[in-house]
Image (cartoon, rainbow, N blue to C red; front, side, top):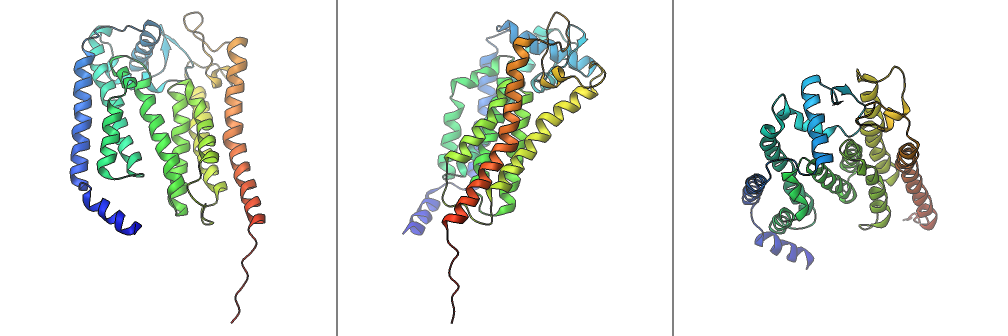
Length: 320
């Protein structure tokens, strides 16, 4: 009966070509509407963040590194200013703003095809398109008119959620490992967009421990799934941050823990100085995240496997 219902749903669904065409139209419409609405804002209005991103983008466009009033700094959340730098250049900020707003609209609207792919793992093409259309109406996407890192952070977080879900429903080992590795890479890259990316490993842990989509096949041991996610996170978060710090012409010689953690002092020394108020919580957040991602998740998965092995007695061998 279930097979018959699935066949009926498939027949009532739209074709793949029509779904892709509708998705492209939805994306283009989102970009155009947001771009036109953004023109009502002709100057940065959130002064601290927007002017900071603009200053960093202009510095990256002219010097190839993050600078604050011409002085190189170790800035951990470099991804969004680097994206804006392609349009910043030497233009006056007010002249560059419209182009950056259109870029924001194109970037943040990528959440629509990501949502469609996510929903497609759950339901039909028609309903997945409906989900993407509903996401297009979310007030949070109004950031497209502002020079805010949320324009890049929202699609990246949505992509991360899709990847961890995709790794959970794939029944074969190889696809599950690839999806988990991708989730780990995106999870780490999010830290280079906004500091809130530090919370994504907690989201990963809560999802993996709190949601069980049926029994876990023996061919897909959780220890390997979590290890792949941890590997991706290590590469794209602490190792990438270390490479950025050591390769930056503005960094001090040798290893600088403050620079590695992304502690900076805008407008005073433009360097990575020790600030106890910032240093202690950031250090705890980074180390806590690393321990959770690289240690606790694989350990919990391994413990669960061992308990499952003890609870399930070996099947009796059949004799003819």
